Amino acid sequence: MLGVNEQKRTVINYTQDITSVSFQTNPRVTDTTIIDSAQHQNLSTISYTTFTLPSGASCSLPSDVYQYQADTINVLRRSHTIYNLDATYVNQHIIGLPETQLVCDGSQGAVPCTVDSGTSLVSRIKLQYDENSIQNQGAITQHDETNYGASFLAGRGNPTSVRRYDVFNMSNSTISSVQYNTAGSPVTATDALEHQSSISYADSFSADGNNVANPSVTTLAYPTAVSVSDPNPITSYIRYNHVT
Image (cartoon, rainbow, N blue to C red; front, side):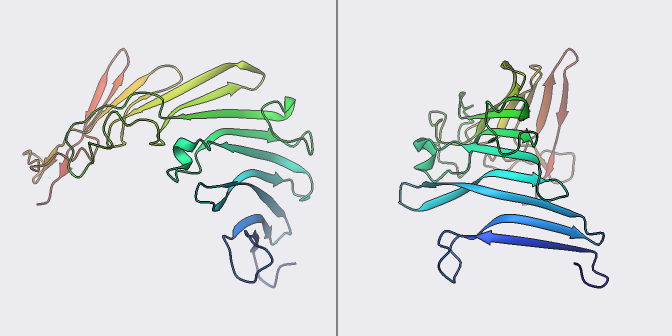
């Protein structure tokens, strides 16, 4: 029960790596309950997948989120995340890259939310990383072109494509994709209908809003032109204030 004049209460429970000790060891949320003044409740729970890093350290990532109906018993929606634990990323401590994201309804009770959950599956998304070539931007100030140039692709952790499936027929899907430059900025984005947008980072600074006053070094830090490839191509230009 809420106290007098109390409108909402949020109760959060935690777990941790070693539950037998009194101090915190990587605490993480296991469930959250929200109660309003009319005693309506909103409960969600989180479970984790645990794996070991090359250093031997244990790492836990949220894998399942259950959202319950108002009775806090029956599941309304379940979300399941499968992570990319390829050594290319884990060895560099690039962790937490989602590979597959699934959403299921609560119609089948305790049936796990998997790619073959039958009618309970309502969404399936697959993410890929570092698939396509990197656009070489040349000499960028304070950028390590030797070790992180165009030849370095796998291991960046750049999301390059998102595939969305038809859950009633997994052979049907749509895909959107992104290409990056050596600085890690997106240079092209293509949607599921193959409409492509291009982004340029060629420096364009001005002290007074009119006259170009670029610095002596190449930064490629801000998008300065965005174009869309459609029957009526449109390009937008941006200029930034440059304070010396």
